[in-house]
Image (cartoon, rainbow, N blue to C red; front, side, top):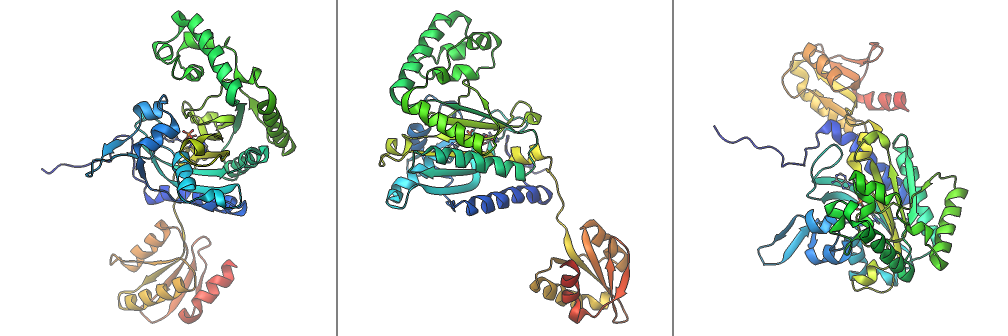
Length: 413
Ligand code: HAM
């Protein structure tokens, strides 16, 4: 017997009923972000490995152990993109977008890849929608981005949204805080999980994310960056908070909020939905004022976010939805040609129309119309007549196929 294949571990097929709610997420994002002046950008699914090493950070879990990296046939190391911000910063530099009016506002949607342990809401290939505003350090940018994400998630029906907000500071204050945290961690080294201990030098902030109980007890006593913000950083954060307050956006300040990417400076935020369980973050982001320069571009402070499409669909409880059609054309055997011509006409008029392609009896076709969720069925009978049936009321009327499109459009209008 020949082998039967399955989708690779941590990946999944999107079947038509699942494609409907996913498409709705993308449509809502396209409309909302389009109205806010964000233009769509598409970058390749793979990039030079070094882009992520430098952009996302060598000490992050993503770069250390989650990238799908391989050598292409030309001997170059390439990586399936684990996230979208570094590629977009690369594109900003490559296309000289700093010459455009700033900030440049971009949005994207597509597949991303991380070699993570699969579980509910966590996959090895998943879909993100993201927005990036590059070229301004105004707190208005941070606030606008958060307001847009809040609006998107609400429109899509994600329940029990919780927004956590923090600032990681920048420059010297951030460096000083990092040293203070490292000293604190060293003083408690014997109580920390091995993984946390091993990363005191490279990535001390990640200690806040540890699931280990004893580490958690230590970290509850740790100093947080929010207590150490000063000067411009403190002012920037105050301004973001004021703007969110004015917009009526509720949030919880959380000085332990660290994100798994090293490029963040100043504002960071995360939208969670507790209903999702362990992987409760629906989306998040923050400022990354140094990334563009770090990738060889001009100074271009920036901010952005990304959401997981699968997590939105899971949280909103819309995993499966059948698409419906306006009309199903059922035909007696000698009227199948007429049926094909009629669906063509109806589709040209802008209606969704379907017909039987499997040689079913008229009765079987009526059942099929029901199964595909048609709102109306037209029956082309043996005598050359045509009857329109409203599938919810069961009401039937004689119709003229020549004016059917008009009749249906009038009815739905
Ligand atoms: P991130 O937090 O790593 O941020 O990912 C954003 C969202 O993608 C998460 O909140 C989650 O919903 C979804 N996600 C991440 N990993 C997985 C996975 N393995 N399976 C399913 N969903 C997942 C970023 O990627 C940043 N680039 C966001 C950003 C944009 N920051 C600034 N600009």
